[in-house]
Length: 150
Image (cartoon, rainbow, N blue to C red):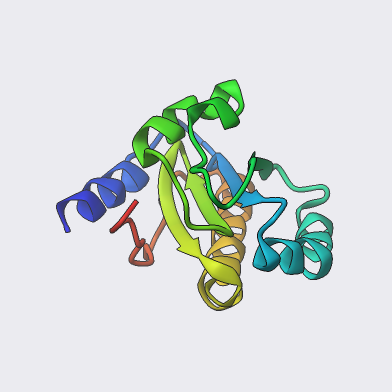
């Protein structure tokens, strides 16, 4: 609860005049994960098409196998902080939405990707567009971000 409140406070804090949110999508998977393969074959292309032309950054973090956790060495240098925060991760596929350098959402599985992650990403992108276009820094009504279990 306190962690969620801290993320909320961080998201409400203005980053300067007309600051637009920094948004990143992080996908964690392995090549031997059937659910990862399913998502990559069916939904990844749609996500990439949706992100094309947007300022949202996409990161793909791949572990060697389901039998071994995804650890810091698998992450790109600019996401080592996330690896340290999450610790060794075995649950894949995992989708993480970062907003202004904070974990806004972290979900496991393709069902929660469709049900929770995509709507949260679209909302964050819409808020980014609103902020960038209006010259305001406020987020208005903030959705309740899920940071438990990250």
